[in-house]
Length: 125
Image (cartoon, rainbow, N blue to C red; front, side):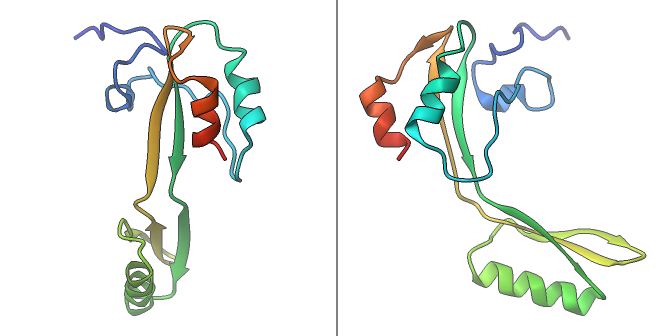
């Protein structure tokens, strides 16, 4: 089946997963400022742009299954609900610890800002 959308034109983020329709423009692994976001979106003249905030993902290697289960118990008790055993290697058991917090909001559609700049300032602190 031919996908009917071109890059940057997926009607929802879930449609773009694995289809090549979604492209990161910039990634930060720290809090960002309003002016940083404005600088990035001012360079966009077409397509859609979303502001995404994702929960942290951490990987730990336990010596054995008991150690991995202990890490999982601690992680889930701390609120990292999307955690699990990622793989088993010769080095040990790899545990992926991931939170469930996420924030996804479209801010541009077809190259036009859909969130007024003063409202965007409320979203990006």
